[in-house]
Length: 249
Image (cartoon, rainbow, N blue to C red; front, side, top):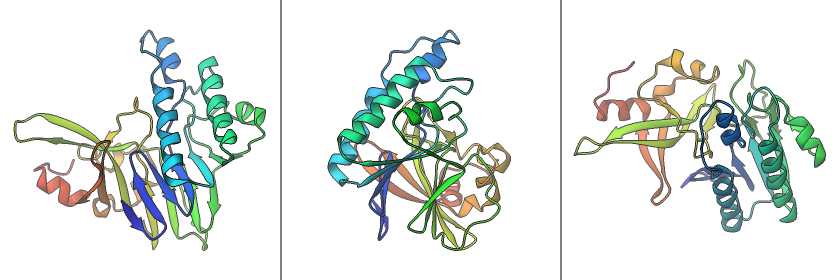
C-alpha cells in the first residue's frame, strides 16, 4: 500500500525514499526466554531474515534501516544475539546494501556487535532526506525544521477484532497520523514473537511510547497487516473503536 508518493508499506516493513525500514526485530528472544525457563524453538530469526530478503528482492532498496530493538536482552549480549545480528549484517553486506541502525531501548550492548562490522549506531535518531528515523522509546520535545516525516517503532501497535462467530483475532497494524504539522508513521514489530499493544484496550497512559502519549492517537489512521492480504486501511482509531463497539479505555 502506498501512503505517500515516497512511502510504501507492506507486512512488516516500509520503503521510505529508497530505504527499507523495519523495527523491533528482538533477535535473541528465544535464549532470553530460555534463561527464564521458557523453551521455544529457534524459529524467529530464520523468519525475520527470510522476510527481509524477500523485501529486498521485491523492492530493491539501496539502504536498510534497522529502526531500533535489533536485539532483545537488556542486560547483556547473548550468544544467540551475536550470531543472529552478525549473520543479518553480513547477509546485507553481501547484497551490497548500506546499513543504518537506530538505537532502541533493548539495544544495550549492541554497539560491540556493530563495531565488529564497522557500523555505528544512531542515537537518539537518524535524519535522512527530511525523514527522522526514531525508535520511539524516548520523548521527542523538539522536531528539527527539516523533518517532514517521523518513522518509528517501539509501540508494537496491534488491534484485536472479533468475527461474526465471536472468534477473536489480533492483527499488527501501521499507524499513520500527524503531530505538529509533521507526518508520523508507526511500524509494527517485524518480530513474530512480539504480538503487540492492543490499541483498543489501552488508554494514553498504557502506551509504551512517551512520544505517542503526546499525540492525538484517536485521529491516527489504522492500516491492518495480514501476510496473505497485505495492508488494508481501516480508518482512524476512533472510528475503528466505534465500529468494534469498544468504549474508550
